[in-house]
Length: 395
Image 1 (cartoon, rainbow, N blue to C red):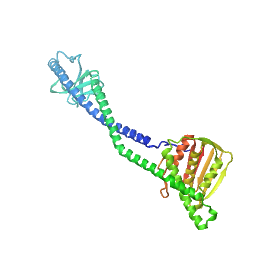
Image 2 (spheres, helix red, strand yellow; image 1 turned 135 degrees about the vertical axis):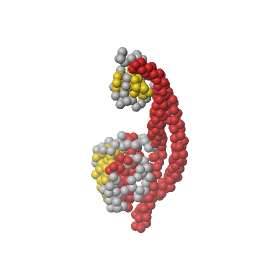
Image 3 (cartoon, rainbow, N blue to C red; image 1 turned 60 degrees about the horizontal axis):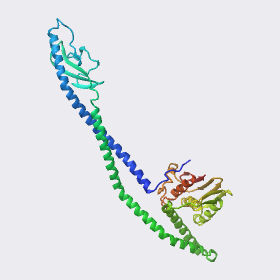
C-alpha cells in the first residue's frame, strides 16, 4: 500500500529543507577540513614536543655513553651494566642485534631517532666509537602525563569557534543565494493569484450562459460546437478551482456535513459526461447505496474531480473508466496510459508530471493528497504503463 507522503510542499518548508540539507553538507565538509587542519597542527606540536624531549634525552644519553666507556675500560674488573633510575636503556651491535637491555619493550625501532610508543618515549643514538661492541644505544623514558592536553584544549576551543563562525557565515550566504529564488517564486505566486482572480468572472459567465441554452432548440452542428465550448469551459473551471484551492487552502475553513457518496459520484460523472463522450470513453459504475461520509462537500468534490479528470485526460480514445463505491471504499479505474509502478510514490508531489503530451500543471494529485491528509483518508495508486491506473480511497 502506498502511504501518502510529502504533503507539505509549500515554499517555506521546501526552502527550510533545502537550507538544512545544505548546512548539513556544508558543516560536514567544514568538519572534514577542520579535522585535516587539526591533524596537521597536532602532528606539528608533537614534532616540537619530541624535539624538546630530544635535547633532554641527548644529555642523558651522553651520560650513559660515558658510563659505557668506563665499563669498557674496566670490563675485566667489573661487568655490571650501568643503570639509571631516570631511564631504561639498551645497546645494539652494528647488525642491530641486542647486546643488553633493560627496556620494557622488546621491539625497538632503531631507524627513528625519537618516537613515542605505548606511553614511552624512545631515543636512539648511533655511537661514534664501539664500546662493549655496541653501535647503537636506545633510551626509554615515561611519556610525560597529559603533555597533549593543552594541544587538545586549543584544538577544541579554536576549532569550535571556527566551526561555529563558518557555519553561521554559510547560513547567511545561503539565505542570500535563496533570496532571488524566493522573490521570483513570490512574484510568480502573485501573478497566479491575479490571473486566477481575473479568470473567475469570464469562466462563470461562459458556464452560466451555456446552461441557459436549450439544447433541443439547436441543430446538431451547432449543438456539437456548444458541447465543445462547454467542455473547454469546464476544463478551465477545473483549473481555476485547483489554482484557487492551492492559493487559499490555508485560509479555507472546513464545513463538514454528511455527504451521500452515491449521489455525489453520480453528480460528478454527469459533470464529466461530455468530456467522456468527446473521447468515446465508456463509464461503468458499481455504486453501493447509503454510503455516507462526514466531510466538507466542496473538498470531497474537488478530490473526486481531480481523480476523474486524470482518468479522462490520460485515457485512450474509446477507453473505459470504472467507478466503484463500497462501504469505506471508493475505487476509480481507467484503461489509460498508466505509469511505471516505481513512479507512483512521487505521484502526489506538486508539479510532478509523468506525461507531458497532455495539458496540466501536476497539481491535481497534490490537492488530493492535501485533502486526504486533512481527513485521514488513505489513497492508494496501482498503475502499469499502457495498461491503466487504479486509485483507491479508503477510510
